[in-house]
Every structure is written in C-alpha cells, then in structure tokens.
Amino acid sequence: LKIGVLVSGNGSNLQAIIDRIEDGYLRGAVVCVISNKADAFALERARRHGIPAVVLDHKSYAGREAYDEALVGILRDYGVELVVLAGFMRIITPVLLAAFSAAVMNIHPALLPAFPGLYAQRQALDYGVKVSGCTVHFVDEGTDTGPIIIQAPVPVFAEDSEESLSKRIQVEEHRIYPEAVKLFAERRLNISGRRVEILPAPD
Ligand code: GRF
Image (cartoon, rainbow, N blue to C red; front, side):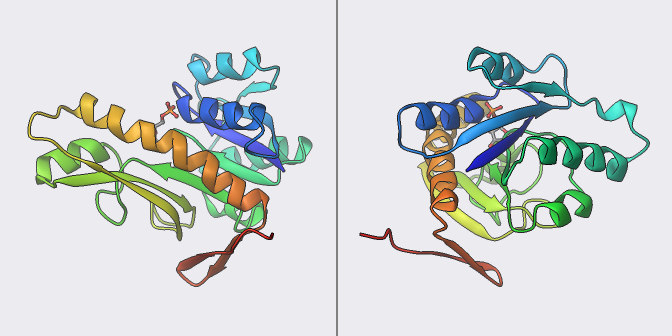
C-alpha cells in the first residue's frame, strides 16, 4: 500500500506508522510526506527515513480548492493509494475527497462525535467527562464527521491538564492509527453508509 501522509507539526503519528512498517506489522510504504508548514518536525522525521518530504505552503494558493488541486497532483505523482491526515491543520475540500474516494483517514483526539474541531482535549476537560480517547475515521466533507474505523478510550483524571490528557491519548493514537492503516491495507474495511465493518483476517 502506498501511503501519503499530510502533516503540519510534530508528526508523532507519522512516526508511529513508519515504525510499524519498519517492524513488519504493516505492509506498505510511506511514499511522501507533505506539510503546509516548512518548519514542521514531521518533515525531519520523513527525511531521516529517506521519505520524500514536500512543503506545500497554503499561502501560495488562491483558495482551498486550488491548494487541494496541488496536493492531489503531488499525491498522484507518488502513486498514493491512501491519504493519512496526521496533525494536518487544514480543512480539506471535495477536490481531495473526490480524487481519493473512501481513501482519506484522519485521527482525532476525542471519542467522536464528542468534541469535534480544535482543542478536543481542552473541550473534554472543560466538559468534565471522565473518559475521553481518540478516533480514527474516514474523512468526509464535514469536520470530524466521517465513518468511524477504530476508537480507543482513556480515563480522564481530576488532576489532568491539557498536556497530561493529550499525552495519555497519544499513546492510544500511536497504537490505533497503524492498526487502522493495516486494516485498510488488508482491504478489511467495508464502508456501508455511516458504518465501517471490519472484516475478519483471512486464515
Ligand atoms: C494528534 O493529537 C491528532 O489527534 C491531532 O493532531 C495531533 C497530531 O500529533 N489530529 P502529531 O503531529 O502526530 O504528533
């Protein structure tokens, strides 16, 4: 499976996916990493593993659609089959979704449909929930609304800060994102309406 990863920041989820490819858990290759930010540490992570690291600055494009057309061009050049959003802080448009139908995934640091959008961990703390977590989902035209693939819960403690909760959630992110990509690579994800059926592993 040829994977293209879109990033804006640290890239710890990118790292988790690279690591699980290198240790043989996941059969595939990250063929390109694209960032809208030139200083994203994720780009450095890509380079360390010999993966092409591309900066595509959104400020050079007239609008979201024009930007996404450029993204699609690069992803196609690398033969990408699955687009993985990993801390990519841009709203994507139907231009990208049409080019990669049912093949764009995202990870969100809450148990959707709770706390979509920015600052999900802050939202969870402010609300006072006792459990939060993370969600890997297919991307649709809404914000964090697409069909859910895997979720993992984590406890929220009274003494938690945004940072401590984020850290606990990230441990689970790094476990379930490679798992979701593996299921996709094995063609074991079947989308029917809102639901994603996980097919059993062939024996
Ligand atoms: C993660 O918390 C993810 O859930 C959210 O953005 C963050 C990205 O972290 N979508 P990283 O860049 O993968 O370290």
